[in-house]
Image 1 (tube, one colour):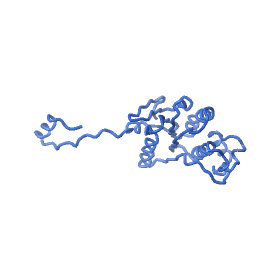
Image 2 (cartoon, helix red, strand yellow):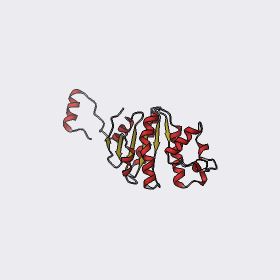
Image 3 (tube, helix red, strand yellow):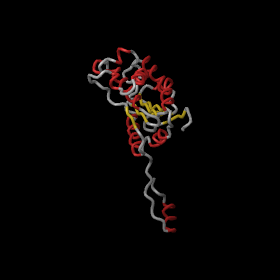
Image 4 (cartoon, helix red, strand yellow):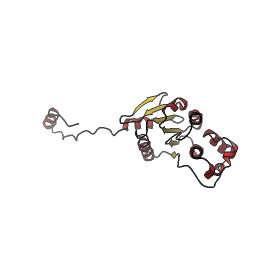
Length: 207
């Protein structure tokens, strides 16, 4: 905003320096502020059509968290190597199996199948399982393109477990996806609608 003539005159009378033109906040800045208020054990869901800025907002969050020194775990690219799914989740087998089940890979044959023999959707779920398995209390887990390529039943089934897991693990979970209908299954504490002017709704209290 350009200072008015009256404001400039007052500055001249009192010897105040001219103010630099105020810059509007970057698109999504306020939504980013809301995401940073997420508490341990809470879930945020960023949704909107393709190209609406979901990934950009998630990237800004990732950058801000790293500047703050927070521990960030991302849902990485799906693995496609020869290792069995269970071997990609180190530590106690029981804990690894729980993470696989949470991501919709609870069937025993899938746990022992090499990653490269899994379908594209199964490998995407394996990537999610690995991120959940590696999370520790108070960490941030960021997952873009949530439920992409999955059928409605599988998507809803996985989404239903996200809030319970985050609360139990004391993890901040931020998911982004284009399927707005999954918000009801995820039950996020914070729902963000991506776009030129992102909007948000808190369904729970920030912690």
